[in-house]
Length: 294
Length: 256
Image 1 (cartoon, one colour):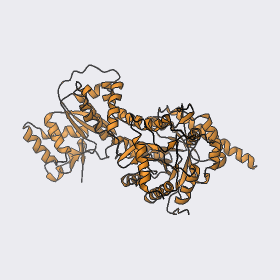
Image 2 (cartoon, rainbow over the protein chains, first blue to last red):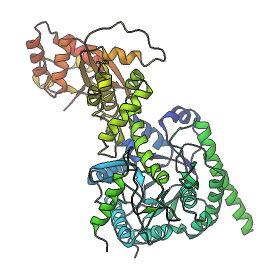
Image 3 (cartoon, rainbow over the protein chains, first blue to last red):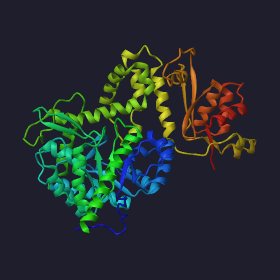
Image 4 (spheres, chains in turn green, red):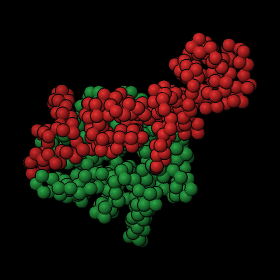
């Protein structure tokens, strides 16, 4: 049973392209005032007490709708959520009142160690219960709906009994959370396990999606010489991923779409060009649907 | 239902395969065709270890420049293996790196290195510290400094930091902000005050007497108390001039 409390603020990003915000692009953004649908930040980078990061975020939040994306909550962790971290998150969200808050279907904390990566979990009834209860706790504490993101994975767990798209559907149905649909992660995960990414998108519970992520990936080979994609966020979105994005839009309709570029960050023009590309694809899709309706 | 401890143990096993020099992979992780593939698991290992390395590089750029990329990578690998982050706030990672450097045998001849790293750590602390109104010279002139209750409202700004070193660390750091490093003429000890104005952190050098006063003040002792301590340590201590210097540097704030 969905237990969405009416007091939860739903995610409400505009159906436009946005970018991952980088301090090195500050001057470009202030000078050019680019037409961006929204900007997204990693929550943990703005959990210092004061100084330049908060001035920057205040400036940007005045100009654009804001999405806050957490990378350290460890929702898939076996242990309890870190209460101190949840409190920090609540303070950040209370201060900036973002249009959306999202986190990952992954874990990164074990006892007192923080692993600074998004580690995978098996999909079983037991992990489903635990993730659902963590998502409940996050939404209760923050007083708002969160979006949960599908991961990039490189290996499968032998004990998994539930398919990833089904796992995400059940979490969303049980907790009332939304989903962050990372189309690059679909490409990465499906390639790495020999799944059909189009079929994955067709199975994905699109009714819960509040945002899409697009990013670049690297290609390597595993020990058997099989092609493996690595979710690196260090380059352009690939043509294949833009192709899947079109397919995702055909199921979803236009939806807030983020260009993530976190490593080897390019100049602002290059990043903005990626966002304009996503906006153009959305606009094509909208005009094609209008024509089809006439 | 699987007991919580089972998944806890599974995550502990995955974690035990993450150190940079580990070679095993979790027994329950396989490719779609059923193989244990070390190169695939190494993606997780590399993500973690390279992100920690990168965090140190970003926090200690001058230290890295002083020793070169290769040696820095060598020390960072040892440090990150022994000191894992305990918080998701990565800007708080690496506080123990300066003293770790002091124990690295191969860097012993660079006696100033740990203090340069300490300075870089403190620069980051000052950068992220809480906001507060900076006490200005005009504020100081408007205050009745003969009134103990007024003096008690003057305190350190949350971003102010101090470092006393037996090496010219501030000059070393400044020299390494440019692309070409001019030969250093400074020798001997240096007291460095870090302050933040308009979000930018800057360095001010203090005399020993000024340093004594500033450290008492930054330790949370009141202005009057700090002045007494400084005067006892050095009878030539000039309270008015020192208060002006610290105010000019933006080191102080007013509390209620």
